[in-house]
Image (cartoon, rainbow, N blue to C red):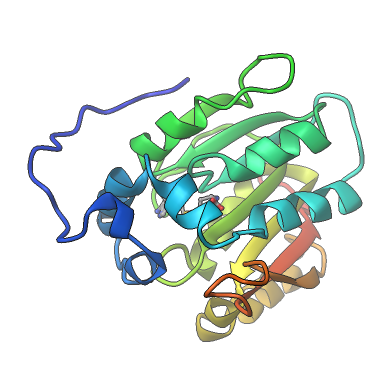
Length: 236
Ligand SMILES: C[S@@+](CC[C@H](N)C(=O)[O-])C[C@H]1O[C@@H](n2cnc3c(N)ncnc32)[C@H](O)[C@@H]1O
């Protein structure tokens, strides 16, 4: 299931060229429509000008934590929320090839990049790539586990969306979800997570602080809190 909307790109919607888009532009996003617009322009250059140029090591850290905490079960169904061009899926499919991975993202252009990724056996990294605004109505699918890097950050998804996304995972399923550390504090993710624990929806989280960027990156020192927990009851 991969839907690509036709978008009129004839009107440039940023004063930047795609090569000049950077972290400040991403943090300046305020609405889902801003995200659609930004990532429409950034999709083709994102891997080079963001991932490579900034030594962006966060997706690898997420996958390593996933591999440490989530048991190796056959045919585990995983959803990568805000999958973008597919960095998490790429690492996950090589470290845990038994996982069937779906990617959810608001940007059809980012999903188009993710659709190009292949596993070592030449099958697609992502089984399904779904265009969805995660702040709106969610698909009906259920997954055994959820991952995310770079999407719970300034201007992007907040704690209320994390709470809504719990419903995408089956009872006893796993979450390995990164949240930018400043955004975590500023938006009160701890309160949202505590409330879900108190309501018996999830286990108390294990929170791991990781580097988002490697040494030498202009942004080295930025951290993310990776929240690892399980769903404890189901409203299925
Ligand atoms: C910084 S990128 C991270 C992409 C990828 N996970 C990575 O680590 O490289 C943030 C992604 O979140 C997506 N996004 C932003 N707002 C969203 C929303 N409301 N619903 C779904 N995806 C959204 C963007 O389209 C973009 O692909």
